[in-house]
Image (cartoon, rainbow, N blue to C red):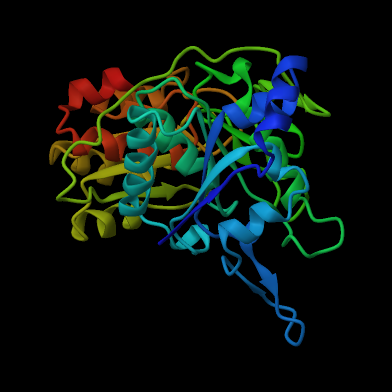
Amino acid sequence: MILVILTSKRDNLVMETLNRIGGVTLKNIQKKILLITTGGTIASKKDRQTGQIHSGVISGFSLASLIPSWKDFSCEVHDLFQLPSGHLTMSNLRKVSQIIDQAFKEEKCTGVVLTHGTDTLEETAYFLDLILQNNGPVVLTGSQLPPEEIASDALRNLQDSLQVAISEESKDKGVVVVFNGKIYAAAEVIKIHTSNLDAFGAPGWGPIGYLDEKEVVYKRVVNNHVKLALGNMDKESKVYIIKFALGMDGCLIDMALKSGADGLVLEGFGRGQIPPEAVGQVKEAVNHGIPVVLTSRCYEGTVRGVYDYKGSAAQLERLGVILGNDLPGQKARIKLMLALNNQMSITEIKNLF
């Protein structure tokens, strides 16, 4: 773990001059940013012989120094992990949250930028949005191409994220994701494209803001910021996601129960339907006291009991299944894991969702 402090090298005379004229650069320097790097494509290099990308090999200092305007910021760089985001664990996320929380408590920074692989970025963003109790700006970003690639989005996304993190307008907005000039709420954002530079979106919602050059513009606010404690950190709650498709039965639920599942998230069709052949296993899970949360595999809309037949959301809810509202499965899983870590009852979990 490497810790590097980046600050402007302007002398006192220049600083005083900037102060007299109200320079933007001085304003940026006075706002200290904590840049936490965790690896991912944004910190990657391509092997010239194989064409394969090596994730997380660029240090945070090297990455930050590629931005022409980095000297305009007072920026502390914390190289935390050098991992593809698919290798991160809940333990890693807890570590990130603790570092951010401590930094704000000790007033070491006014904003945080976290660089991250794009594959699981939305899950980390949502986890932090649920956990962090402070009101300081926390911005996640990454890239689809390594920094050295032609037309790479890495440096622009990092530059934009620094601008969002120092903006007065970013306070009390919760955790946000900045990508391709747009600002997304952590609860709404998902990765929508495997390779396109416009990789993130918020289906049904859209971005909450955008960047116009260096101006940070917010168009709306997300107010429903649920907050949870980290809970018991000694035991990792085991929650599986099961996605249903035409003609499936409940064998995957059986396997999850035999593997010691603490909770289940089901991705059903449309409003939350599942095949009738799986209802028996769902009932078994509920009867064993295991919380089962129902979501939809659709990108937009909520699950709701509008149909009345075997496998419908209405029937599942009567059996004791918890409706996951409009959360996608991967975020419902994060929420359920934290609820279990806090030893919430089934009733409390239902109210949480």
